[in-house]
Image 1 (cartoon, each protein chain N blue to C red):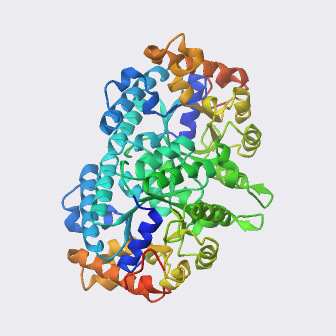
Image 2 (cartoon, one colour):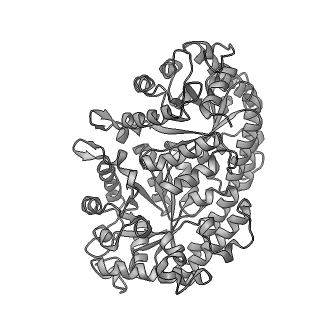
Image 3 (cartoon, rainbow over the protein chains, first blue to last red):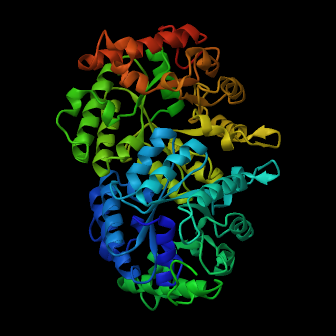
Length: 315
Length: 315
């Protein structure tokens, strides 16, 4: 089992793009063909539709991008049947060669954190993802179990540092010892990433930093030299390609940029509605993915985004 | 659907104790009779054993305590079958008249937080718990969806404030504007609790404050007058009855104290091993629950813990 940081580096180099497609299925926005005559209260029926929808999205994006990010909450909302659909979605994405970053924002203390890590990371786990997002509030001994399991099983963990939502600053921006809380978390994460560096120079511990805070993104790229940055907030949340440029290293590596709604429900975006519409929603997914790849290519420093095959291990 | 704060108050008054039994099933510690010849890698088999174990624990504690707290991680570890066992456990506990506080420590931004709230809170939800633990790192707009759903559906939300683990202070104790981070979170939580006060004087927004930090527990009781406090860390983690005394108001209300391993796996504790042993593990659960009820009765201020039927609404 290769080091997660190296696997992600290789996948970004191979596909030539850092686009991460978020799998956030929502019933009301699912194309009519997939909703069929399923009743919204038929949770197993909705779960099946979610799994079918995600399979089709995966079929479209698998040749184009390195990774997908299923949002656990939308599956969890459907109860046990939804969790089954989540397991099928993860397995299908991996079978199509995609890395899977589970967005669960889990955390707990000690052995309970280890149970979450067991649930989501590595070959023996129930949901078999490649990485998991985790929340830092509970501190050191709530995070190290995730890092330990990640190390043992070739997985990764992305710690929330500076989130993309407008209210994220309420606690994250509080200043202690001349540094905001998010910076304290970032410094801790970088230590962990540096200790777990792979051949590519990045560790298996990453950070979540929103595209909606470009100044902080620049600061955090600088102070987290060994840390993969997962950048949410692009597209529907308002982050632009220029905003995320600062997340990359001079080789155009070290960050992945997520877009969910703007890609998977692209058929509903005014700019795609006329060309595709709901019946050709898969073509809209492809067009939106290619559009985002192009937008990022224009602003990312170097080769990883030029479509050239990157070197691995890097020169 | 009655206000969650009032329902909890009534349940504590009715049972005369604030003991909250944590349902944290772990395969290695499950009594042999329940493990049977199930292989540890047979996840549906293990999930069935967890559900059976929790049912038996619930049968023992339902006449004695107001509420139980299933730990989602241990069920989640078993994959979709585990989540089914979790749903059955929640439904069974509620059918036996217990309030169910789901320990999921969930959080996310905006509409995703709402999906988690939908998953766990209220009558229409997949897991139908009465309350859910949530993590504050993502700030205001990640928490209000939980409070909104809780209000609409008669549920509650317990926000992590000061957790019981040794490493919890890494970020929670950072001092900004002369107050530690946990105090900032506490002040925010109290505002939300005060806005949602029921007839009992407590809101439907609560706080998690560990028994392992008795000084902070005293401080936080003082500044969170409208906030239910969920106190983990009693027993196996080292918190004593004297440590948790400060969590209560002068009427002996306003807090619930969790114990998990020390109750559900009491058969393995040296003091109970001889009298009960593994074959009479249910009797050990009862003895440990009664012991904890007695220990708390000795230190809690007034009537709620004396076994008298409390007044509701309070005088």
